[in-house]
Amino acid sequence: MKRPGRMLAQVLESVVSKPATVRYPFVKIMMPEKFRGRLKFCAEKCIGCKLCMRDCPTGAIAIRKVGDKQFEADIDLAKCIYCAQCVDSCMKKALEATPEFELASLSRGSLRVTFRGDPAARPAAGEPPGEERAEPPSDAPKKA
Image (cartoon, rainbow, N blue to C red; front, side, top):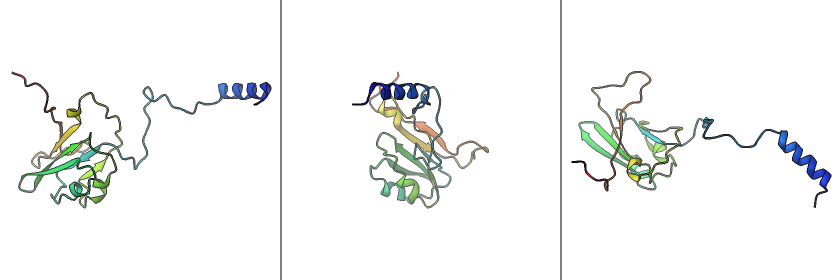
């Protein structure tokens, strides 16, 4: 057991020292450059080889052909383990891992994302390519 005098010095030192934690919800933190967060799909770059589908260990990605040299991706973020194996295997860099990590949701259906691309409407500079849309949950009631 430590002597009371030594313990008191350690307690006083910890009171005036900088805390080891951050005030996360109130202060946003910057993630490292190579952080593997939410996936983003660029339909304009995709050639439909489906290597990302084959390499995904959980089967979270589905690539569909919607037209001549046009593809869309369905990504189930609830299944994804964010290993970025799909990003590494994509030859044309159509997939990328973003630093976004706040993906909590109350419904599983909102974690199913469909990325669509429209070659006629190219994005302006600074805008993300493709259109992202969350799929409605399959068990959701239909509106009349």
